[in-house]
Image (cartoon, rainbow, N blue to C red; front, side, top):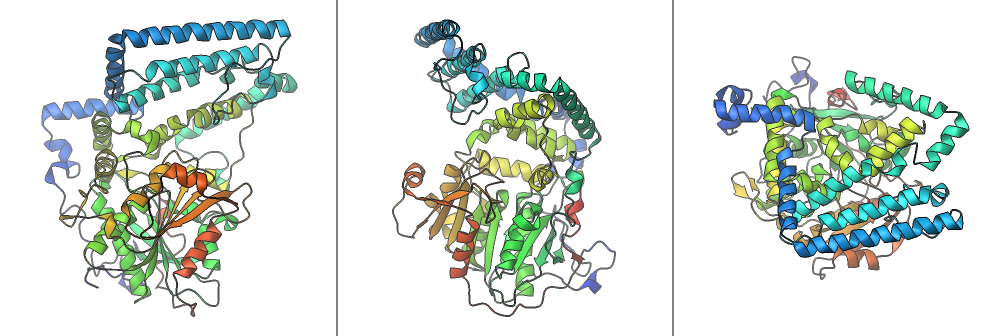
Length: 613
């Protein structure tokens, strides 16, 4: 092959200091080619006083605002306010709407009082709003409470949208911010206005509130002390989760590569290499034995390799996107080829790992190499023009603010990342949790996926900055500006068959954005839309109840179908999409053969990087 893919060192006798690093072939310095203006802690000392003061102030502010830029919010507010102030027609329109809604609510309240309680609502909640579905909410006066809230919510939507001259992003920010504020005052959040909470409190004599208060104190103490959530200790990697047998067969400063032991007499000759996102620990794909994708694949007769990312610290602040490509995907490919030479690889990428896999595959294809038999992507985007509500947090002001926070500490940690995701689904992820856990006293039992979600990671300063700017802000990958090895790459150079999965409730990688692969990949593309969200939709093992999916294949020369039409015309199937995927892989794999010898073990699975906090 023309591309210099490094081969892995597999022999234990090459390890001299117990760290697992190959001292005979030292790993090249990851900062040798970095721009000198942003190299390590030295940048803090070299920064001029004015810039240092600016960055330091914003870094301190970011700790209070959870990384959200007050300037970005203020810019959106002033844009909206200035245009609304000079739009008398819009002012008249929203005034008329306010009066009509007041009349509707007054008439509804009077009718309910006269009718003695229940009456057909004057406004229905949005389909995804489950807060007021209970029968108790249909009785007076609680029906008036929630109808008033919904009418007020609808009116504010009218106020913050449709103002001529406001930029689309600022309009979206205003609508989003207003919704967050209104969600705080939902009648479902308070004992005085929530009939279901009142009934629960009467039935238990207030013990639910005592349990909730105790749960809140426990969660607060664990958060401040850095301890995991209560019950997470029952899902320990290597014991209850991440237990599929295997070996670490390669290690560098950024990854451990795990090869899993075969469980069948014969295996497909083409191995599977899985590239998970570095924002998460890999074992979401190797949870409990009954829902482990890794175990499922191994039991289907595949040789599976998994990348386990190192959890970076402040000393890794200068690791960039290209370091993750080279030391992550490229080194892993080299290691797999060293163990199974002359075999094509089924590449698999999850979330950001899929984006990185696309970058690596495009650069390899550009240089004339062809190591892949197929590529599969789970909830992965290559075009970032419509990434859902995450786009609200992507502009120059917000990224500069976030960069200043990372500049100060060297990385972005999991708590700083989780704030944005929680706000996107605040009704479910924040207020519903407060209601159920701290007021109803019904704290949900811990389970494997929830425990994994609490086992967070960090992202290096430089890599995260490059990722957000080049992909989310500038959309360089699909617009021909993403540079690898001094030259731009194009995803149209990827010509192997592709299997792409989107999930219906994904707020991180909305499925219409994932579907945009149809616009850019010049190859056969099988697309799956599955029930569930970004994580639960992927962890969708056979036998999982209430799972469904849609699947269709677009041939190389088929005409484009937009996502809405695709969803409307593609039949829905019950069950797990995993079975469709392994059938798809089998069609693109050779006849089963006896398993080859595994690579030399540096450690037993799940390795060592998985335990880094």
